[in-house]
Amino acid sequence: MEFITESHYFRVMPFLLEGLVWTLLITFVGLILGFILGAIFGFARLSKSKLIYGIATVYVEVVRGTPILAQILFIYFGLSDLTGINIDKITASIIAIAVNAGAYIAEIVRGAVYSIDTGQEEAGRSIGLTRNQTMRYIIWPQAFRRMIPPLGNQFVISLKDTSLFSVIAVGELLYMGQQYYGMTFQAFQALTMVCVMYLVITVPTAVYLRRVERRLDV
Image 1 (cartoon, rainbow, N blue to C red):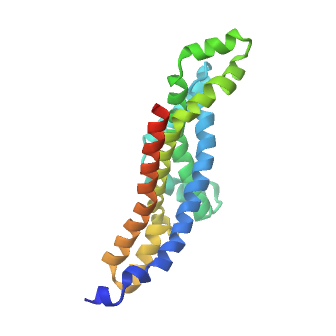
Image 2: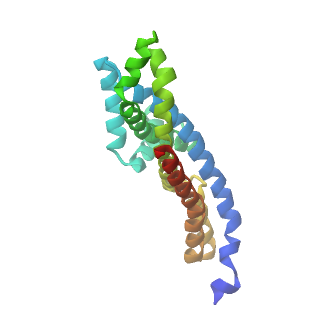
Image 3: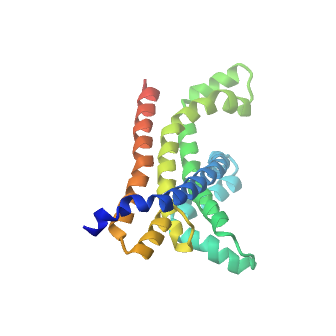
């Protein structure tokens, strides 16, 4: 009855709320940078230049073909060893999310643009728009609407990926739960609340994304 009388489910909350702040901060900042990278490399994957297309393809395939845990360790330890510059663990975490998410977002961008009927580009050119203007004013707005559901899914994936940053002692949600049960030996209660905190974010997000998808399909 110890775990009931001591209410560890509630005592762990200050730890988890502190971790949640870092989890959300790393996720949001990382995804903003990841979207910028994804847009750049996504359009590069549409380029007619073999060099630009090749560089973008290497980035996408290397990142998607390696586990994010290896990427985290490479950025935090490997780059520090190579450059001799100590990278702050929060900075390393944001970079890892940005680089990893950017590769997947690049494919989301490429796929969304490809999904727009070619007649849209022809229509733009027929009214005197350049290729870039057609992309900006006609194709991109339509493609972006189609990107919203997969971008939301990427948010959920990146949010859960932040749990891996505990390996470099980032004070995110899982790490703070580990800190609590390391002091109290109440692993079940602490980890249960960690899972609940993730679900509180991911389940409503998934429900919202399904509604958005239905609206976009109308």
